[in-house]
Image (cartoon, rainbow over all chains, first blue to last red; front, side, top):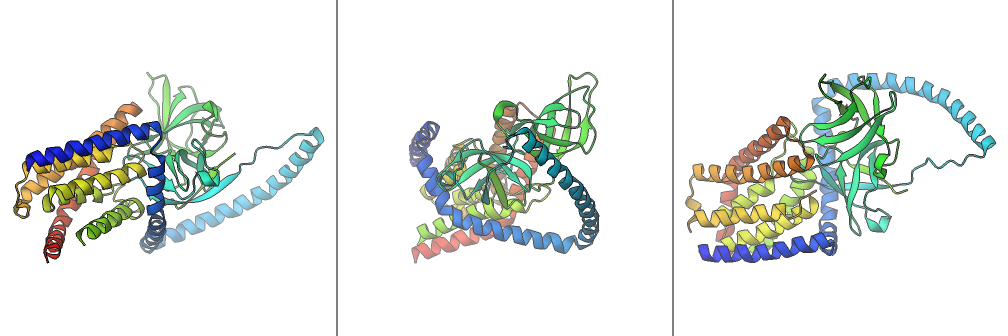
Length: 263
Length: 164
């Protein structure tokens, strides 16, 4: 039986090696696409159902907290509405000045909305599979957002699905900037720890609550996408750089819909 | 009939793992149901069935995961190979201690290898990452111990069904 087992093992190992070779040459995409397509409808259903179940459980256990959060958010919305009104006047003035100068406005993003079908099964790597692919205009290296926050980048694209590497993945690097103090750094995922911003100049005046956005350096991500806010700052006197953890408004465990920036 | 049941088990576990369970974290940890199932297959199924199941499960998980591609395939194959070398024919009489040790070692190989790969490539070996990985091992083994009596009964029933 042991001999048979070894024979089966080495037989399958040869198949695996040829699959790995095909995958590295990119000739495996048809199989990837086919398998994604087969499991996609079931994945979408389970993903939606699990989101609803989780929302229900969270709501039942956190009713008291929800009420407090509701009051706080209502106050915040009122404040934002008044700021919005002031900004509307600024926008109108800006548009008028642009027309006067003949300025061409190209800051808008074109996006494709997609639903999440699968999460990474290991819980160490952080990635998702969505239900839109090459047929919808999605290409590798396109940025993905959710509720206005950057969540990741497209890595693999198939005909009807695509894989997105989340910014919480330990192998994800996002060139970022803190616009308040014009400091640059690199946002990286940490296993089980969310995201941190590294390689920030030692003399940068970091403060909790400062916004972190994509810097656009390296051309990997469009400039100006909101990542999160500075939370805890780590500074060592004998180090060239300082770092800070980033708090994002997005709960990556409850993601349901994403937008892919296609231009 | 057995093949259909095995395919159904593969699909259900896969979808539970990647679409449903991923949203329900216990302190950020999620048990690896597919790994639990692969180990159970090696205990209660014939070796060639375990190899076939491990191959297809590993292939699909590698396609859905961020990588490295081939990781699930190779680790699952190694688990089945190790089981085939250690276990004797009558697999229903394995001791609880052995099943715990085998599950613990298999899960540890899976997660420690993945942690090392990710940390090496990211040039970031952190204590938190290692503790998180150990947490993943513990929760997966805990769920294995919870589920193994039910899985044993299920596979025995499946065996009787295929003989009938």
